[in-house]
Structure formats: C-alpha cells, structure tokens
Length: 169
Length: 225
Image 1 (cartoon, each protein chain N blue to C red):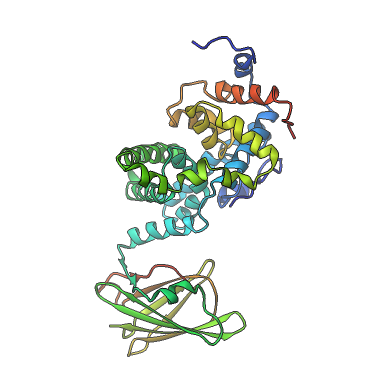
Image 2 (image 1 turned 135 degrees about the vertical axis):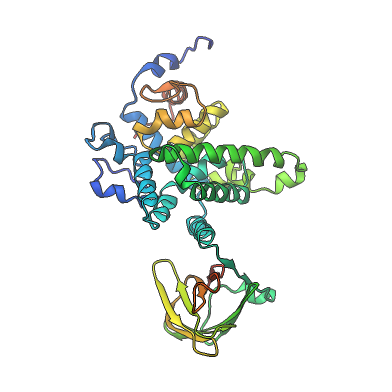
C-alpha cells in the first residue's frame, strides 16, 4: 500500500509505543501549546455559556462607551469608572473607584432593583449582597480582575436571573 | 495553561478530581497503573461526566477545564480561525449539556466531544471556504499555524520538531496534535474518534509516529532528551 521506505518507518510502526514516543508526544503537546495557545479566558467563557444556558438567564449587555474609556483597562487610583449593563428587563449601573492599595469599591444601582440579590463573581470568589429598597448595593474591598455580576429577583420565581458579561476592573 | 507536566510516576487517586488542564501526562507509568482507566484523560473525563449526571453540577466546570486544550487543538487542526473555534467549542459543550442524559456511553464523553467538535468544525469550515481570499488572510489562523513569527521565539529544537511535524501528511499531523494532549492508553480509541484507521496509533506506534521517529532519527541536528 505504501512504497518501500529507506528510512524503515514501516518496521518502526509495528513496534509498541515506548518511552521515546512518550517524550516525543510530550514535546508535541508543549510545542502546540506554545505556538497556538488556548486563549487564557476561554475556559471561563465556555463555563459561563453553559451556566447561562442552564439558568435560562437573561444576558445583559455592556453599554457602548467612548473609545477612551474602553482603552483603559482596569481602574487607576482616583479614577471613577462607570459601567452600565442593560437587558430586556433591567438596567444595572456600577461605579468603580479605588478604595485602597489594589482594592476597589463598587457602588451599584439596579432598576428595577428593590431587594434584588446581586452576586459578584471573580476567578475564585463569589460574594452576594442584597440591594436596598432603591435597588442600591455596595461591594467594598474588591480586588482587580475579571468580574461578572448576576442579579436575581427577590422572588426567584418571578423573573430569571440577569447575568452581565465579564469585565476587567 | 501552556505548562507541561513532564513528571513521571503514577497519578494519585485524587487525579480523578480532574482540574488538570495543564497536564498532558503521557507518563510511562500509565500502562501499569492499577487504576489505569482513571489515570488517563478519557477516564478522568468519564468520571467527571458521570458525577455531573449524578447531580454534581460543579463537575461540568472541571470537565470544561480538563478538556479545553485537547478540544481546542482538535478544532484548530481543522484550520479554523480562533473566533470560529470558540463558536464550535461553545456549540459542542452546549450540545453535551443539553443532551447529557441521552448520551449512551457517559464514560466515553471525551470521544463524544471529539467527534462532535470535529463534525461542527467541518460544518463551519465549509461555510468559511466561501469567503474571499482577503477575508481568509485576515484570519489569525495564518499567524498561529504557519507564520514564522509564532515560531521565532521558540528554541532551535522546537523549530526542528515543528518542521518535521509540518512535513507529515495532514491526517498524521492532526492525529498527533490531538492525542498529544491525551494519555497513552487512550490513543487507540481517540484515533478512532478522529476517523483514523485501526492501528494508526496504539498499542503499536503506528505509521504517523513511526514516520516522525524515522525522520528525526535521520536528522543529525535532532537529539532526544
């Protein structure tokens, strides 16, 4: 089926896999990982898509911002950054300001948002607060990082949760 | 995510937990490991999926983390750009979650995902081939798969390996690229999931790896570690 090969790969092919093969496969994996790496936040985004699908949640969108606001990632000291998320049933606004070394304070307002529970999720941590009667909520002492909010109605049966995209703060 | 665990020795039983995204693990002990099934990527994936089906919803996160590297390279080997690859992977995972209870052999979830991802990649790439040449040029597939820039920062031995891998037939390159992210006892079955003929790899070396070995053996510049 194949032409005779002076390199003798055909006899090599019959042999069982050995340690040299194991090393070679490791090196191939290393090489592809380096040349064509998996995007660093792909796992997070895939997990999010699955969660969203399972929750049957409403996905909020980050409202378009001026280009200069988008250009600066993260929050510098003394700067206040405001993000607005909108979805069919709710608008959520968060103001982010530095509150200490590498720490942020987030003041949020959800409308309609009386008594909603707001979840802040970062890589390893999840925190929950309940908004007041005006839909205002606060997270203090928040580290920088990729952050996502999930807003749940006081009566979970009344409305599906609203989930924001992850933003770098 | 780009690190490679080259440590040898059998995995602890805790490996079943399955958050080993950075581990390619083709360690030599796998074949003789008493708990061999669970020490391979396919085995750990099957365990995690069974736990998910039994109601442990957190197990899905572990599964995604564990299998994203191998699935990424499965789809990228079909020459899709990264945005399309992400779409394919999302479609594939949503199909798994939505059909979780209907999957006949949950222990073979990795094989199911490989087949689904490849099929979806093929479907998408047929659509892409209707794009204009300029649109194709804009895709980052060129920069990652073929451009010298991506390789410029690699070591000489990596460049050498790359050139020999690149010289393999397409199907061989795809096979080695994908199963390099799995463990040796899985090779034969994963090769089958990639529609490769029986004997392509595992338990014998098979023709693709044999060709690569032969090419490297005759290249004086190459040294096995």
